[in-house]
Amino acid sequence: MYVYTVLVFLAYLITYFILKNKLHIKSNEEKLHINTTHKITEITIAAIALIILFLIGFVFDYGLKPHYPVVILSAILLVRALFERKYMKDSKRHVLSILTSSALFIMFIGIEIFFI
Image 1 (spheres, helix red, strand yellow):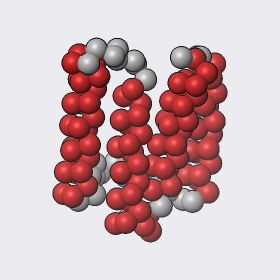
Image 2 (cartoon, one colour; image 1 turned 135 degrees about the horizontal axis):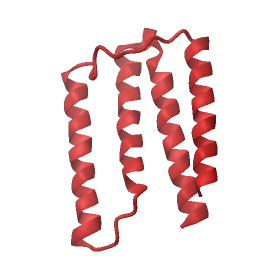
Image 3 (cartoon, helix red, strand yellow; image 1 turned 45 degrees about the vertical axis):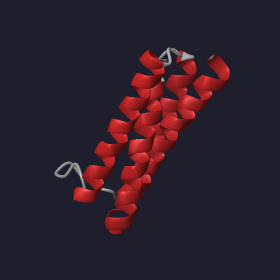
């Protein structure tokens, strides 16, 4: 399982840096959220996800697996990519957000199918 995770992560890092250099994408460290709609949407998704994780882990007692938060992070990154695509299309940051979300989702699916 660790080898699979490391291989997916290395493939992601290589692709990330190649795309970042090819598309001339600059870091966007000054702003965390694009606008207030984006901020509210991300907070809502995170709150709903935490409620679902609480229900799965404690109320229904299905057992909380450590890779479930990866799905939440993947969903939040997908929403971020959609907002970046809509409001900041020229920066091409959405390509890196989609790549990150996809890598996390591939990692989750691989762990679910092959190791559990």
